[in-house]
Image (cartoon, rainbow, N blue to C red; front, side):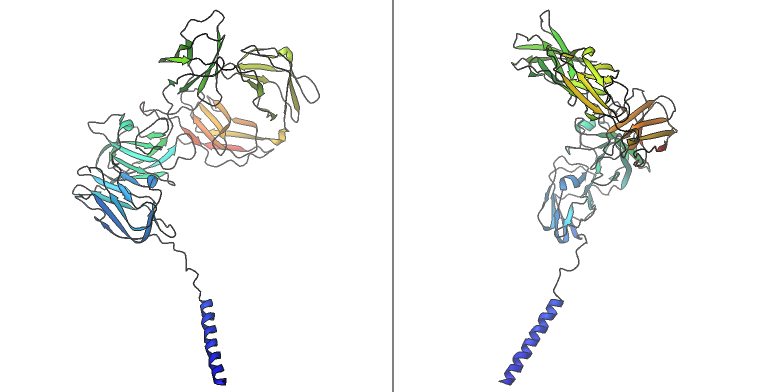
Length: 536
């Protein structure tokens, strides 16, 4: 019995030892896999010549997935019919490419997968894998490199396509709207540089697109474009810089729509600066109209009275060389009433003016019924300005620090287009102390005038700007104490605004130079001085 107990104890001790060892050595999964998958072989082999296959297989040493292929995979030259690539999203040890297009003779093709190939477990990418083959006897090996910038913004877009069009006997400037390029590459999601590779010797036109629809053709409504003005000769060692910009669309009027009683919306594309709207039908002797612009949308509102006693009417829209006749069908809708609201309430800066807008066009203001007083109830002198198109009244008056201003409008101070008047209105604004703001002095070196100097937010919104035709100091006073980007627009035509480019006119956008650093010194009661040396 005792011997049996010793045997049991011995067995139990061994079990404890094994459990103890097991506990000390319990697997934790090991080190995290950080290695990308490896290619075992390709069929046909990568960099094959005299290529005639219709299917390609690329084998890996582990299970892989293909992710975000629609953006990551770039095929150059682009194919008319996209190949079938499997598997997508599911794990496999190989990628199969089924070619559906007729391959061009004596042409080098490149499938650049970007970072779309990842292992199945940790999704480590196989970076920028490229499968290349030639339908001819050799692989084209020339290349062109360059840099992508944004003409207006500090940072360029991601996934920018850079394309080369062969300048042969069929080439015209309109090719970018109609045909896919000879060669293409993409900056993907992190790079601002590009490299077009496996090129054939020749002369090309170079274009960059943020190709929203992924069809390798320029659609001005949605795409930005950048272009090199001259011929790109391959081979060469030039580093090309392409600046992306959105073109100003050609003017086009959109079918009018009744949106309220005696109020018709005329939408448009392009620049409506000289847009005019005229009714072609016979009108009563007391017929009146007003035109106002929507603050946000590309729309003009055509206001009229009295109501037209007809089902439809013809309107002619003109803008510079543009003329079109549009048919409008009238609807019975309720008129808008007159509502008045301030553009800004609460705190107002010393550089701002108090302003109001109305829901129907203003036709009269009686300044005898409007009074502005400060916190001591002292009356403050003011002047008004009226923007007919925006339907905004601006009240200009001198402001002092740490003050409150009450703007009182008695009944019938304002009259709207349909005869409506206001009830008693009271608006209040206040000012801060001078020390709550910053002042910034900017001096430019090597500037070519005229210029526009702007302070923008980190998101690119313009907060302050000054225009100059000759060298001077730019003092920005009483600005909000936040971070700013400083930029200079070289206003070539002196129209005091930035002008974009035109591809067909081969006109580059006006140049913008950014101060290299974010300005963080615009603190309250602090006056930074910025010297901005500009490059030629």
